[in-house]
Image 1 (cartoon, rainbow, N blue to C red):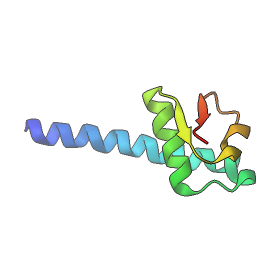
Image 2: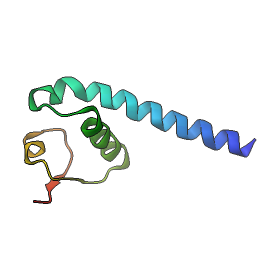
Image 3: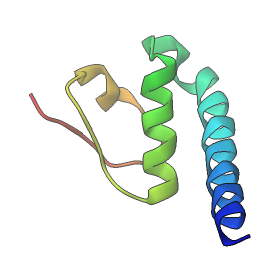
Length: 71
């Protein structure tokens, strides 16, 4: 039963990340961010950690996240 509880918790977090990824679409569409880009941003938002990217265009985002360009 403990295993099932752990899996359900993971599934709930995944669902929240998926929803956040979809919600970010209108706010990032003009910059051409991919589904993977938005998933990365959603995960960073949930975990409360900075985002590292090599895409300078991300620096134009105003999502309340700390975004650092590594190039």
